[in-house]
Length: 263
Image (cartoon, rainbow, N blue to C red):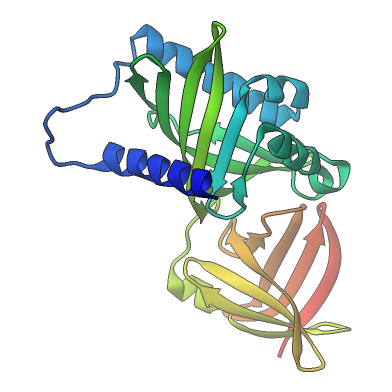
């Protein structure tokens, strides 16, 4: 536990150090994008996440050092390379991938690389996550920040520490509160009531049965009147008669699944 705490404090200190805007003495700078180190770490980042996106676990494992540790603000702490591969096996399993096939993409221009003398390099970057739809399209569902410690081991670059943090929901479009407010209310379905309310820049859908909440998720705006979940290919569509919202249609895989009337 002491090792975990020390490692976490070390990584958070690196993040804080990288984000300070005030001048410090001495002043450390990220390497230029034209430098060999930058190009090398950019390539390693691309290869590492390509393996993750493709669920190529053998290649993915080859990038991790034997003392690998992973810190995630949502998922928590992963103590070893073996534990990480176990988690990735679940992430890449048929059940998970059928419900939420994800792709990570580096946000252009966000990558920064700092040399670590006699060790390796530090990587800082931002990325987006996309839900992959079976028809070949994608929908953005979130963003996050990454700090990675790369080490040269036996002439090969290995990840020794990763901290993934500041995960935020992200949608295809952003709607005003006035538009979101149009859809707030209860919708009557054959077996339940579906409640809609505003939650920040999103909607919150809650299924209610016998007066109790049985399921609740965030809805991500796609167009002015359609919203999607951050898993599976489910879309909620609001229909109106002139200026009044009257129906809610729920689609799965492009097919109408359910239809409800506004209360």
